[in-house]
Image (cartoon, rainbow over all chains, first blue to last red; front, side, top):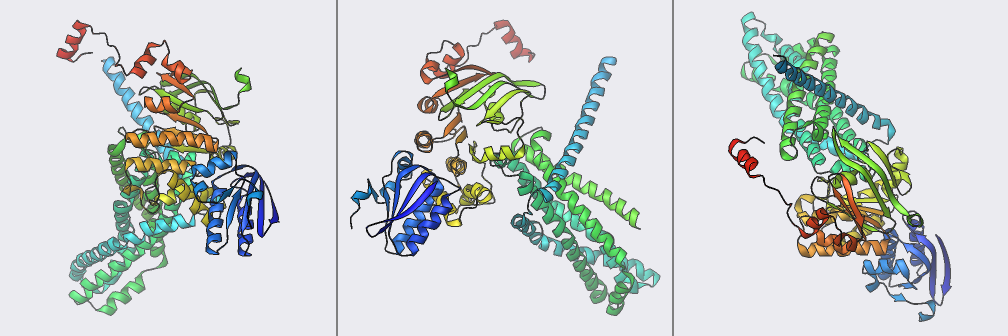
Length: 107
Length: 265
Length: 267
């Protein structure tokens, strides 16, 4: 798993590549919480993500909640395949704002 | 006639081999449990929980039984000693009997009744409900997670319970001897202090530690192996196993009591 | 043709005894990755025994069992532990520990085997509870749950680490029809979303036909047939037809012997 941080408009982008599982989700958690605690809304880019397990999903839930408490936002970009199925299985596709690509992000 | 002898011999043989197998399993069980002490980290949280169950919750029972035991032996000794005019030895007599013998044995019996039966049943039910299979499949070591904490908790709690029993017993003897029958309080207490030596106390500690080991070992093993040793499964099997555990613990405890006493006296 | 398929479970020539009694007779059992396999058979057919061998809870008298590349019969503790972390097992009556709450039961594997943050673990536990329709039951004790709820809690614990391989012992037994159907749906969803290979031991025909990619039927410790649902339904084997049509076994009655048994008690 690799992650990259970037910016897009006023957001921080966290691009996830590969698989997020029990072993590396703590790293993702650290990054997400750091971005939010620094006061930036975050876009989580799933375009290169092939797999995410429950620990990854739980991390997103925790981050989403933190964002909400800080009046920030957390948006999922380009979720497809297995990660999309997991979001549907957990009904989180009805909770997280989800966009098809970075181009769809408004100011 | 030969046709009747052969089945009889076979049945004796089968019973004998099954008893030997049972003893072998007990041995393997305790070795497995003890080996987890150095194989993994010490299970502190689980042990503390068990100390609460085995130790703390047995205290009320120990207090009552200690008190009444002390009271009755003081009564018995008083009746004897007064005939020899040696009633000032009451304190020493009560304390010696309790510390060397009655404390360890009676406390152990109370523990067998309360903890031994409950532990055997608990572990037997776990076996019945496939909880040990579940632990194995989750990669959690049963001996480390379930057995070792109970063993450690018993080794810590039972000697302490014995000590509480002794204290309450001596107090009960004081109530009967001094408060009721007018024995001099000085004679009671100082007579006790003068006569009791470290050897008496150490005998009590050694006995109660050995009893602790025995009781928890047998109770857990009988529950753990109930799918092998009991003829019936389910609630029947648990009840059989518990009865066997209680009886075996009590009998072995008295046997060990004699051995330790004869070695140390 | 089978060489191109990746088998995550391969058991060959399994022979097993319980004391002197033979319980498994040269059983071959192969499951492909991502497959849902149902093991069926009457009582005493050996299906639970086969399951226990695959879980490495029992050792066979002879034969090989390879699960996800691990020879479970001869594996050392460390290797077996690594495999077990990737395997979930849901037992017939849940097998929860009565001294812990439902939530503590479900998160136990995470607490023991991972270093995940407590928040992460709690959310993961609740995600699984929601999936099993047990939201809000986190702080109850197992004794406060019904049989169906215990099963679902046991399943939640089985999948808490998102295992590759899931074993299910009699999932529908004792459940009402609605919950049983929901559980079937869940099994299918778990395979699709989490890419799990699932082995189910059951005697519920409807469930089996609904979820199975393939069914293995056991009789008296031997494999009668392994095939797709269609192949099983069209099997010429009379025992299988009896099983799926729920026909009672055809007993031939010898009148004389029957009267003798009734009147004298001798067999």
